[in-house]
Image (tube, rainbow, N blue to C red):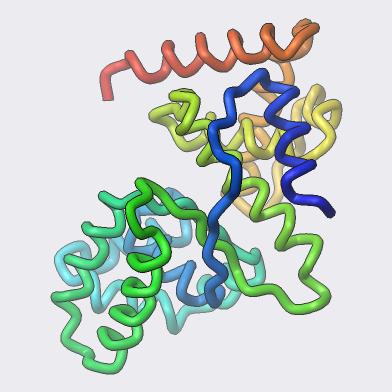
Length: 229
């Protein structure tokens, strides 16, 4: 798969501006990304469940999560993430309070690599290190995360992760698949993605041009982002 070509197709479909000549990302271990998602307040129910166990002791919450069956399942999802410079600074501050020297050293090394790779950028895409069998999934996850960056660049990121992820899911799969209301599955996170991909499919149903789709996203972002949170 030609990553740049696939991105350009999606950019054209939505009528987005694209100021980036090259796309920067960092390949990480799956565990490093899941830990980063955990510390970075990712809304996945599995992360939330363990963060709530010991809200005043992030180290204990993290260690409990890392030894859980949910963590093992999470690694199979082949994770990715876009991290901002403000999130990076926040997470670096969190790990300073980790007393376990081995864990703290591991996380310091990871976040130092992220900091150097990010350099003077505001955001950086993190994506899992794939095996040979995972190459196609790696490409899909990378495109998914880079599209998040592009939505930010176009000031179209919504203050509701469900709408953001629903749009990415709509773009990742054949959009017609989401015209019908999706069936619920065991994976709660996927159900949220699919439910909101369905909402986007209905919004885009009568859109004829990239400009139409852009205006739909722009209006939805304005509607969501002006609500009281």
